[in-house]
Image 1 (spheres, rainbow, N blue to C red):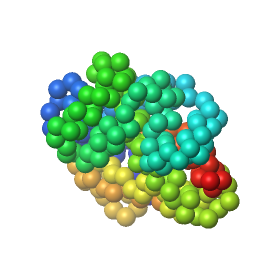
Image 2: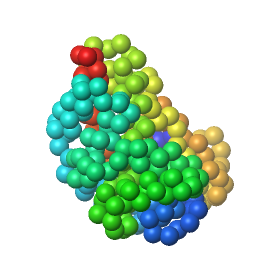
Image 3: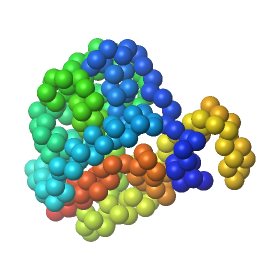
Length: 236
C-alpha cells in the first residue's frame, strides 16, 4: 500500500504551514522547497535540488566525512558540514541548520532564534531568498538529523565496515520511518476508499528513502557520507 500511495497522483504531500510568508522566513522556506510542493512547482523545485546535488562527488564526500569523523568532530554535524562544503556554502553554520531543522517539519515558527538561524543560512547562500537558496537550505536541513541518525544506527549494528553497517541500519532501523500524504480525490485502495482531503500515514520501513516523485534526492549521498563517517569511527 505504501508504494501505491507514494506513486499515485491522487495523493500529494500535505501543504506547507505558514507562520509568516515574508521572504527569508520559515514560512517562506516551507513554501519554496520541493519537500512541501506538488505538481509543476514540485518538479521545478526538485530540479533545482537535483542540480545542486549533481555537483557533489560521492567519493569526495565520503572522504570528507571520514576525515571529519576521524578528527573527532561531532557526529551530528559531520553530514551537514560535508554537504555544505560540497554545495559551495562552507560558511553555513551547523548550529543554524540545527535550529531550522528543529521546526522545519513541525509547522511551528520557532521564534526569533530560528529566524536568526535562517537569516544566517540565507546569507551563507548568497543573501538572495529565492527558490535556489531555498533548495540549498532545504537540502542542508533535511540532511542534518536523518543522516546523523543513520550514522548512529549503523554504529549500533556492530558491523565491521561502514558499507555493511549502513546497509544493515537501512534494513533494520532506518532513520525516517514514516511520512504522510493527502488525498486530493476519492481514491480506492485495497483496504477501502480514501476520501478527498484525508491525510494518510505511510510506513517507510521497507523503503528508507521513500518512493515516487518525492523519493529522497540525496539517497546515494547520504549513504556515502554515513559510510565514510562510520568507517572512521570504527577505526577510531
